Length: 450
Ligand SMILES: NC(=O)c1ccc[n+]([C@@H]2O[C@H](COP(=O)([O-])OP(=O)(O)OC[C@H]3O[C@@H](n4cnc5c(N)ncnc54)[C@H](O)[C@@H]3O)[C@@H](O)[C@H]2O)c1
Image 1 (cartoon, rainbow, N blue to C red):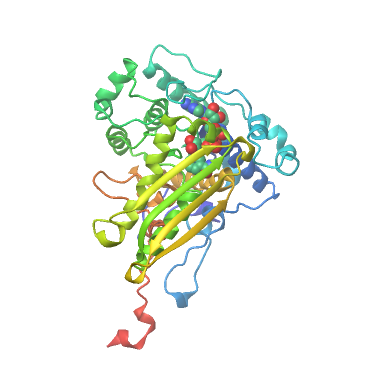
Image 2: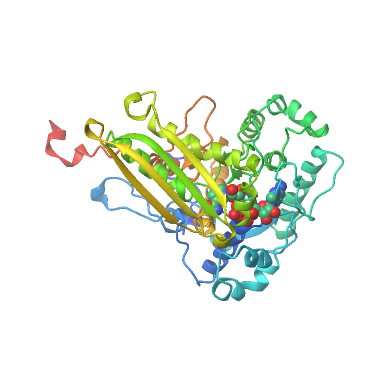
C-alpha cells in the first residue's frame, strides 16, 4: 500500500514514510471545516465517497500511453491514510463540531451528521487568537488572553505541542479555514523576523491573527496552507522563516466555484484567440462567510483575490487588441435565504472574427463548502507530503487549489487550471523519479525516427 512506500524509486526525492498519525489542525470550525471533518469520517466509515478529492480519487498516468500505467495517486506516492487523520480546531465561537455543522446547515443531519454525532461532539474548538478589528462582523467568546501578540503566538505553539503529545501524533499540518480578515498590505513589520517579533511585542496593528497562527506553525515546523484570501504566509518574513526552518507554506484562497470556472473559461478564450470586453461576476450567498464578506474591508481582501487571476491568465500586455480593455467586476451579496448554497452568475462579453460580439452566461448553483471540503483534505495530505519530501518554503505546485497562488517573489502565478494540474502531476512524477509528461507524443509516429 502507499503507506509503506518509504523512498521514491528511479532517482526521485527521498520521502519519509507516512507512518503514525497525522494531526490536522484547522483554524476556524465553521462551514468548510465541519463539512471536511464530517466528510472524512463518513468516508472512513464507508458511508460516502470522497468526491472532488484528487488525493483519494484521481489517477496519474506514468510513462508512455502504450504502457497503460495509471495508478491512483494515493497508491503511487506515500500519502497519509484517511484512518490516520486526527482533527483539532481553533474557533472564537465555542460550538463543538456537531453543533457548528448543524448551524452551518451544509450536510444533511440525518444522513451525514447524526450517525457520527459523538465523534463530532468530541471535537471542541480550542480558544482562538481573535480580534474583531480584523473580522468586523464576528463576535466570539472562546478567545485567548495574553500580554501581547507574541504571547498569544506562544500559546498557539503550546496548543500544537499539546495536541501532538496528547494524541500521540507523528506529524501536524495546519489549514486556515477561518473567516476572511480585513485587507492589509505588507509593511515594515513583515520584512524580517526581528521586525516581526518586535511588532508582535508592541501589538502592532499590521500583525493580524492569521499571521500569528502562521508564525506559530512555522516555528513548530508545521506545514501551513491558507484557504482564505488574507495576507498570512505570503510575506517576506514568513517566506524566509519557512525556508530556514524547512517548512512548507502556501496559499491562498481555495479555488472552488466561480473562480474555478473562470480559470477554465478564460484559458479557452485565450487558446482560441477570442477577445474579451467584459466579465461581470456576481454572487448571492447566505452563510456566515457571506455575512463576513458583507463588510467592505473583508470584501476588499476577497475582491483582490478574485480579480487578479483574469489579467494573469489573459496577459493583456501580450495581446492588447484582445484583452487590453476588459471591464472586470466582482460582487458578493449577502442573501441569507440561500445559506451555503451560493449562486454565482457570470455575464461574459467576448468578441470574435472581425470583432463581432457574443455573450456567454454561466449560472453556477453551487454549494460552497461541498466544493471546498475536498480541497482541505488534499491540501492537508499534500502539504504533509511536501514536509516529508523536504520541500520547504512556497509550494507553488499546489497552486491548482488556490485562487491567488503564492509564488516566488517576482514570479507571476499560473492561474490556468490545466497548467496548474500539469504542474501538480509533474511534481508528483518528479518526486517519485518518473518521467515528465510533455504531451509531445511524436514517438508514436514513424516520422519521429527520421
Ligand atoms: N467555501 C468556499 O468555497 C471557500 C472558497 C474560498 C475561500 N473560502 C474561505 O474559507 C473560509 C471559511 O469559510 P466558511 O464558509 O467555513 O466560513 P465560516 O464563517 O462558516 O467559518 C469560519 C470560522 O472561522 C472562525 N474564525 C474567525 N476568525 C478566527 C480566528 N482568528 N481564529 C480561529 N477561528 C476564527 C469563525 O468564528 C467561523 O466559525 C473563509 O475565509 C472563506 O472566505 C471558502
